[in-house]
Length: 442
Image (cartoon, rainbow, N blue to C red; front, side):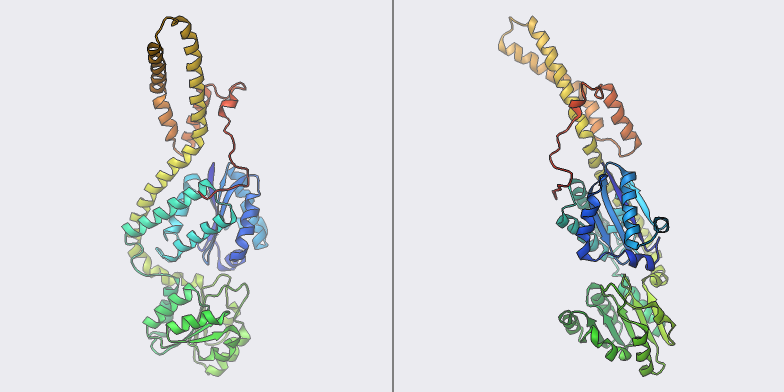
């Protein structure tokens, strides 16, 4: 079995493509079921955030699995495969494990070390469990991923500073306005990102906070926490002109804020500038809004310039974190390789036991006068000798490297023990305990 990790992120694809591929939560199960219906894919999980869309699959045929996932990306984006493929990366075996560990630890994030991504990775695993597409391998992979990320964050300072996309958006607002004291803020959306932004904005002196959300009750909860005012999305046109700063992070699939609404608000503001940051994917604010005078619109990709100011001080800690991840990666790969060698080890043991039994049957012809205790001693001796003889071979097979060397050693053992002949192939067969589409979470 091989693990493959296929996807794109903020480094390889612009926000225009990422928003085409963003997957709403209520569609994830159907996509995962479609994925494991492919003959080459046994297990699958999907991670979809504002900065990345990635699929992790367990397969016996990496090339076929990667091709199938590429086809899904092209279909989802409604684009030619060649146009999408140039933005995709595909990692297999140890590279796939390394990438997932890095993602969960925040080492591959737009904001190096940001903490929210670990929760998003955990959620992707929970979706796979709920859909029944996470089996034994993915279960172990994600448990190892969470352990690796926890070590990286607890044993280094990579996550000590509370830096995230929302804080970077607030930092960008400070670059535009200088002092944020007394500024009025409108938050579109009332999720985690909005809450983090409200916390940073309040800490930087913003006094009036408006919260607009599709569900008024959720907007009221957030507004109450920060002494603000709650709105419905339908009320946006009536209050937009009062906002100096607009930060949007809804889960809408289409634009929420259109140019005509912003133009009407700017007429009331009489040339007072308005700063808008759209950190949603798909985007909430029509990009044509940027053409309106005195309007400054930034999307999530524009935050790169702010992020760069925080990178240098974190690179050293990131190096320490990667060493920790390498240790966890090595431990997981030993376990994964053992899954491949288990049937071979079992076949060798069965063959050796069969040979031992046959030779003991022959030897018993010459032991007719032996006492039961003597016969038992000979039996113990034959077993001990076989165990001693096979010890180093089986130990090697249990700790094979997950690379071409491991594959070559397994192939050599198959030939050396003559397990690939028609009369012996039954020894290598391992009964399937579950069907192709039956999965377990443990």
